[in-house]
Length: 273
Figure 1 (cartoon, helix red, strand yellow):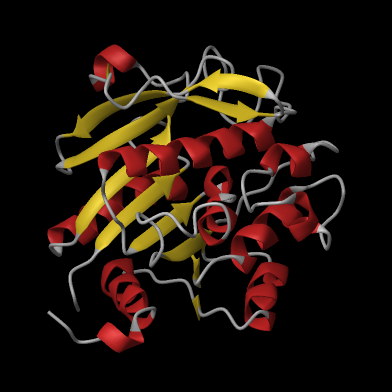
Figure 2 (cartoon, helix red, strand yellow):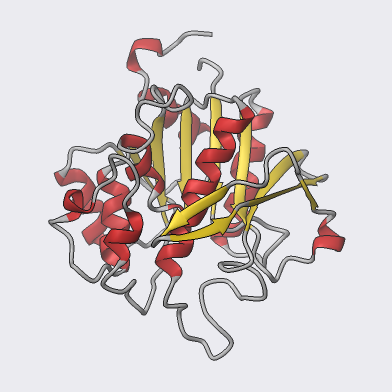
């Protein structure tokens, strides 16, 4: 297939967080595509459980310093970077004291979903896209993995659709067997607003967004969907098919199948080298 620039936006990446299917794919998929000579960039949140010294993270001053306004509040964007030597891939981390500093991942110390998880996902999505613009790098494909990346497809197709970095980009979303117990509150739609990403685009969704809404939002604005776990709630696969969005079923040996799926999103370029 034609070599492509692929941006991986991951919720979790091993070894920075504990191993599970999502975190392992966060490492293995970019590594596999890089070994096939695709050019990659990889992002994840800088969760507080990540040991910066052990992981050898350091701040990238030239990329940090921007403020993102969410819910009428300025939130400083901090970018850090590290390398997974065994996989030979570099990882960019999106950090912010309000959303990630001294806090766990999805759930707090008593096992409850953070009430601002929706805002955290919004900050992460915008932080990644603004950083990619600063890198002056133009991805052919953006591959989103995990609910933290679920608002990226909406932003790519609306708020960032005229940006030179993303004008021709295709978006792929992998669905994992995840869930969030708590909804995102009645102001999530307002927080999500940015440029052409308006709240009225979400009129078909619940006023109080929940995990199902978030997943369907990601699906609706994606160009392709991948079932990344063996079992996925059928409502999401059926929703994608109703929207006529291509779906790739679960693949045990994923690399060749994913690469072919990427290529199918560019039918006019299929077979180019």
